[in-house]
Length: 76
Image 1 (cartoon, rainbow, N blue to C red):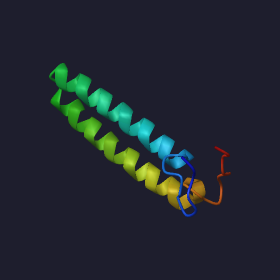
Image 2: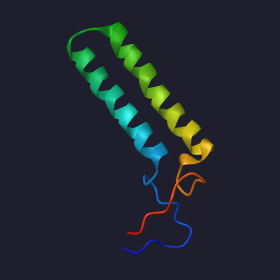
Image 3: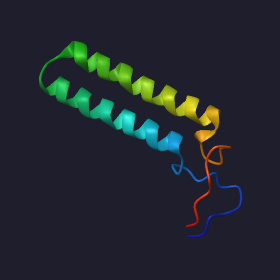
């Protein structure tokens, strides 16, 4: 598939990678803590999930998002 003009390159940015890694870690830990019956840490994992979303948004606003000023386009 070709990359149409105007496609922001979803997921090809440091902001997206950082947010997904943080959120994947939160989901994994939340699942583990749920299985181990540790409700306080399950809710802490929910908080970490929200932190991941906020970090991704903040990095996007700082220029690390798709087509951001601090990222260089990759040739596919």
